[in-house]
Image (cartoon, rainbow, N blue to C red; front, side):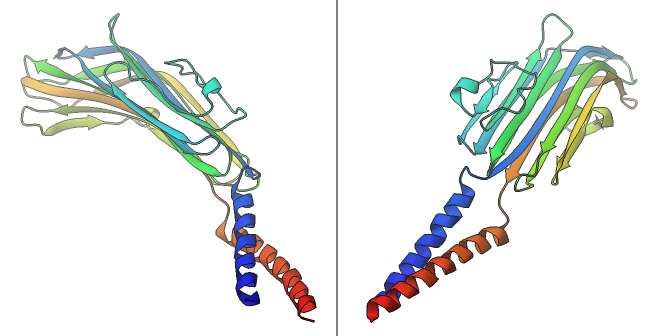
Length: 280
C-alpha cells in the first residue's frame, strides 16, 4: 500500500514540475517579420489580358493565448490573426507591430488593380514571449493571358520594397526564429508546359536564428525580368509572392527531465523518511 502511494506521489510531483517549466514562467522572446511590396508593373513585348487574382493568409500559434485563423480571397484576402483580441491590427496593416506584451501571429495579402498598373502587399509577423510555437503567412498570385503577335521576348519590370527581421533573445531557451519572402514569374504555353520561370535573388530571401542575436535585412529597387524568345501565340503568365514566419521555443528534453527527476527524488526522499517514522 505504502509503495503504491509512494509511486503515485512521485509521479504527481514530476508532472507538477514539468507543467511549471512548460507554463508561462519560462520566457523566450522570439520575433519574426517578413514584408514585400511591389508596384509600377509594366510589360513590354506582349499584350497582357485580364488579371485573375488569388490570395491567402494564415496564422496559428500555441502560446499565450493559443489560436488559429486562415482565409482565402481574390484581390484582398482577410487578415489572419491569433493573439489577444485588443491587439488585433486593422485590415491591410503591413507595417510592423513589433515586440509586444502578449504572443501573436498574423498574415495578410493585398493585390491592387486600380488605378493601373497593379501592385501587391503581403506580410507575415509573429512574437512569442514564452514556450510554444507559431507560424504565419501571407500569399498572393495573379494569372493572366499573354499574347505575342510575333516571336520575341517578354519583359516584366516593377519596383519592390521588402524586409526581413528576426530576433532571438535566447532567454532561457534559444528556440528558433525564422522569416522568408519569395517571388516567382512563370510563363506556360497552351499545353500547360512551363517555357520560362524566374525567381530573382533580390526578392527571394530567408533568414533563421537558432542562437541569440538579431538580423534586419531591408531591400528596395527596380527589377526587370526578360524571358527567352517565345513563339507567336497565347501563353499564361503567373506572378506569385509569399511571406512566412516561424517561431519555436521548447525546453530541452534533458533539462526538463533533470528538473522533474530531481524534484521527484527530493520529494521521494522526504516521503520515505515520513513512511519510516510512521512504521515505528
